[in-house]
Image 1: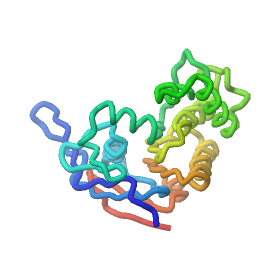
Image 2: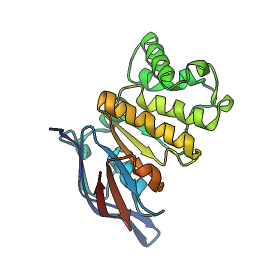
Image 3: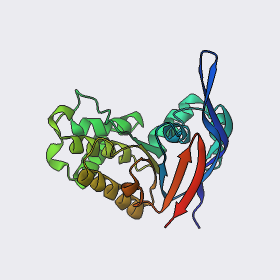
Length: 229
């Protein structure tokens, strides 16, 4: 029986613009089990990215709580949150956010070095994951020398290099063509099968969403529907 990895309870998020309040999330309840693959769908402004950021501890909710492996995230100090994000969570976004002056190998090494691994171990891990993602011939290439698909695979390698419990991806295929996007999802499926990596992806692409057995639909800051296949 899979254990619950993340639990969001009555989560709200309010942004204030002057005297105006914008309710991005309106009381979200969500449980994510270890090893699940989940797609979150909805129109622009539905609250998908805000929810993903709160689940990944990148933002704090206005009210409500998030528990990670049974521990309340709001009780963690900032250094504990940083360690959690670096060692147990992998993040992938629509833009790759690779450091332009570092090559592919060095970019993927960054999380390892931040976690305190030795330089040699960091090189070993980064090289192994890049080779697994068919980027072995691109280790010394900087981001500007890579195609869009290659850049996003390097970013995915960076997200996976610490063997995280969960990968949180916000429109990771948004800048890719359909074929390349499907390849990226296939890599996430492979890691889910091989290592039990939990994957949560925000997308507006209904075709890609059906690669995920659990699909959550959002509108106006609410979870309005769930499908399983």
